[in-house]
Image (cartoon, helix red, strand yellow):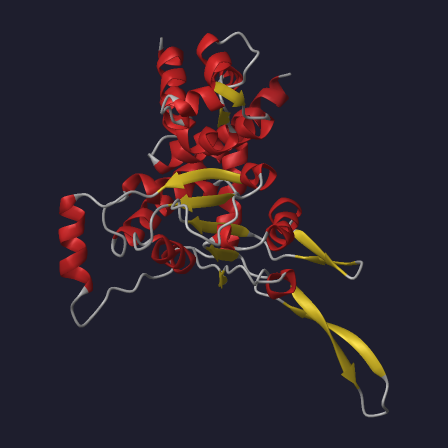
Length: 336
C-alpha cells in the first residue's frame, strides 16, 4: 500500500512539474500573439484553448476583424504546418481532400496516384466555411471527427496534431449554407469576434499602417503542443467542478426540469458539450496560470461551448431572445 502511495505522489509531482513548464510556454504563446493581435483578449484566449484542448474552433464575426490573421499568427507561434482554404459555393470535396490522378510509366502501364489536398495540414484554416455546399462541408466533417479521410476506399491518416479553425460571417448573405448541427457539434468552441475596443483600434491604426509590420516567431513546435494536449487530459478535475459541468449542460436541455429551458429551448446540448467543458476548463486553468480548474472556468466557458449546440423555440425567437440570453440565465441560476 505504501509503495502505491509513493508512486502516486511521484506521479503527481511529475504532473505538477510538467504543468509548471506548460504554464511558462503558454504565457510565452500569449505574449507572442499579443504582438500581432491587439485587444480581443477573449477571442485569442478561446481560440488558443480550443487548440490546447486538441479541438477545433469556429470564429464568427463580420468581415475585417482579423479572424484570418489570428489563425495564421497561431500557426506561426505554435510551429504548425498550416494551410488555408477559401470556401466558395462551387468548391468540391476533392478540392479539400485531394484526388486520384492517373500516371503512366515508361512501359505504358497506367496506375492511380493520390495527390493530397490542403486538408493534410496540422492547422487548417477554413475561411467562410458557411459558403461551401453541404456536400463539401460533409467532406470536412469526417476529417474533423475521425482524423482520417477515405478516398476510393483507401484510408489516409491526417497529420498530428490536426486542428480546423474555421471562420464564418454571421451576416445573412446570399450564397451561404448554414452548417449542419452535426458539424457544429464537432467544433469544441464557437468564438464570437466583436468590433475592437477604442484603445485596441487606435493601436491597430498606428501599428499596421507603417512600413514594417511585426512578424510573430515560433514559441513551440507540433511535438510540444502534443505534449501539452496530453498534459491537459491528465489534469485532475474535482468532483465539485464535474458536478457543475453536468448540472449546467443538463439544465440547457428541455425536459430536464428547468422551467425557463422548457419554455425557450427547442433542443439542447449533447454529451459532447460536457466533454468540451472538461477539456477546456483544464486548458483555461493553465492559460490563466493555475494548476486546477475552478467553477469560474465553467461559467466563463458556458457561452462559447453551449451556444452552437442548442436552438431556441420559435416563440422564444419571436420574443427577441437569443441563445446567449438563455445561457446567461442558466449561469446565473448555477451561481445561485
